[in-house]
Length: 120
Image 1 (cartoon, rainbow, N blue to C red):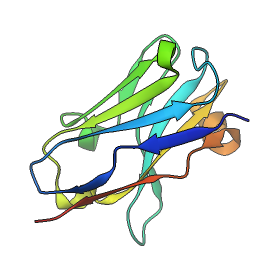
Image 2: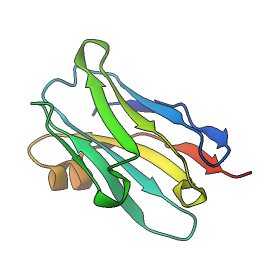
Image 3: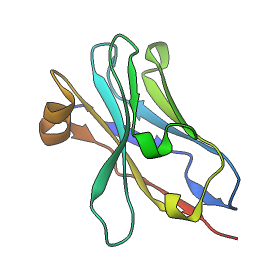
């Protein structure tokens, strides 16, 4: 099982930026990596996913403000979040798996999450 550790969350004012990182315990070159978030009282939702060929899918609602990337040499993926809004407040989780995004979600590895709070 892949160990994942998120970092970079915190309290930020609306309009600010954050870069979240997810460090993996293994070589992630062949893994589908994804960011999810879970707001208080809501289910976990997919934010973005990046595939071994570096193809990226962003959820439409955040595509203009969120940018996902990966550095296989560092076994780390990132989520750059710009122009943060209060509705972005959530725990952000990283996920890793193989075969497909659904398989990664249902059978892959999860980090412990990092809290992002957007408030003035």
